[in-house]
Every structure is written in structure tokens, then in C-alpha cells.
Image (cartoon, rainbow, N blue to C red; front, side):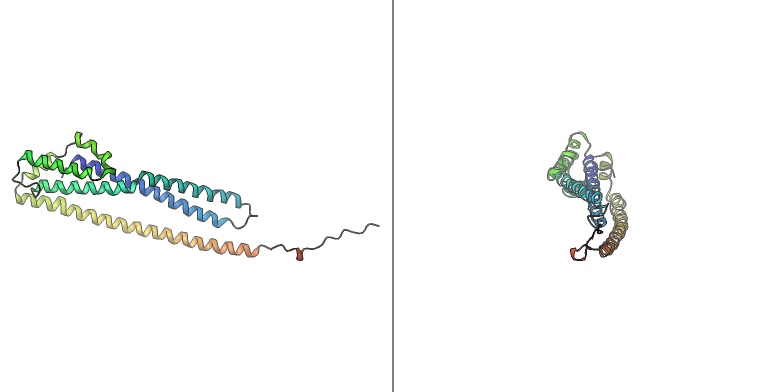
Length: 232
């Protein structure tokens, strides 16, 4: 079914916010992981790697901190959730419109039902201030009631049932099935990444312990006293 332009706008805004939030969160996570790895390579202050790796640790933590503030200020997570809520609410309202159920009963005239639907879409968008700026433009320029919506609404009950089953129920079933499979693959990938980093951390810890055990500690009592040769 062709959904209202407000649905398309809120869905797009949600996807953009989701992408930005996830990308920046992954970058912050990787920077913190790098900082931990760089600190593991710094065995002692006398090492030639102490200074460059310490600089890398500081730089990684500094950039990660700045990006955390960027994520906090931009509020991509809130825009992501609000955009998704608006899109799904408009989609539900659209299906109620085309099926002719409350509050868009089939007994209403075309003018009444169109006005009622547009008003509900406006209220849905206004209820989420974070997404209002990205969606409000389409309220005046986009089509909130498409020709396909009007066509489905004019069908008989049996025709509406078939359309609802194929384009609503089965569509949602396929979407959630694919999403579950995708999330399962993502879980396996991140689990493998976490295990690899933890194993690497254990190896670095053992290396650090071994190197320190090989370093001889200077003690004045063990120092050899230099005796210059006698001059005759």
C-alpha cells in the first residue's frame, strides 16, 4: 500500500538517526578498545614504545569523549525512537482509514473522513517534538491520503480482508522474521569480537607480567664499587 508522505518522512528520519547513533556508538566503542590495547603494550617507562603508545591512549580517550558529547547533544537515539513511533502510528492510522474502522468509519463522508485522518496525523507528529522538524514540512506539501488508500477504502469487505492479510499481516511477519535473523547474526559477530578482544587482553596481561619479571631491579647494596687502578 502507498502510505502517506508523513510516514515516509518519519520513517526516513528514524533510519537516518538510527544509522548515526549506531555508527558513532561503534566508533566510541572501538576507540575505548584501542585505548585499552595501547595501554597493554606499554610495559615500562624505559621502553621505546612508552611515549608513542601513551599518546595513542590519550588521543583515543579524548576523541571518544568528544564523540560521546556529540551523541548526547544530537540526541539521535531519541530521534530514532520518536521517528519509529510516529511512522508506526501513522501506518496504523492509514490501515484504519482504508479498512473503514473507528475512528474512520465507512459511514463518514469523504470530506469528513479525510479531515479526520489529516487531523490525527498532525496530532501524532506534534506529540513527538524531536521529530516534528523533520516531518512537519510534508504536512503542507505532501499527500497524506494517497490514491491507493482511497481505492482500498472503496473495496468491499472481502476485498479488504485479502489486502489486509497480504499487505499488512504477511508483510509484518516477513519483516520481523528477517529482522530476527539479522539480529541473530549481529549477536554472533559481536560475541566473537568480544571474545577475541578478551583473549587478546589476557595475552597482553601475561606478556606484561613476563616482561616485568625479566627486568632487573637496581639496588645500591648490589652495586659494584669501582676501584681505580693504583698509579705508581
